[in-house]
Length: 117
Image 1: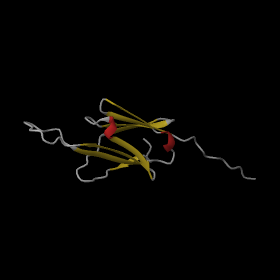
Image 2: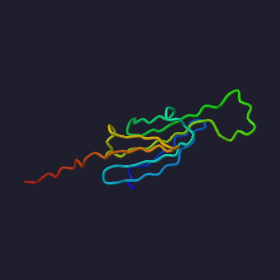
Image 3: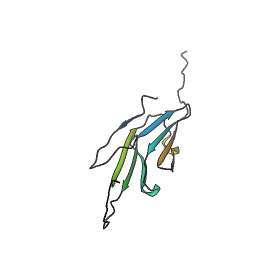
Image 4: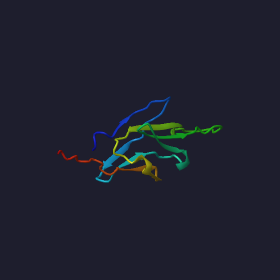
């Protein structure tokens, strides 16, 4: 795992941090975050100032006479500091069966060797 890809938990109100798996290949990073019970339209993925921010919010059901209420309303948030090697213009996101999959492609290696005369 690339040591430059790490997370910071951002606690706001009663936000929870979704569980995540991360894999690195030669071409990209792939992140899978658990976000069960959220509609795709309620999930937000943003890149700001070198950080990837993933958030979602589930509103409480009002005017419902619950016998049992174990499905919590609230929000999920996770912030990851991105390595400079990530191509932030081409990040791909897919949501299926409660899992958000993010593919973060790597920029081509831009190391240039300088010959010494």
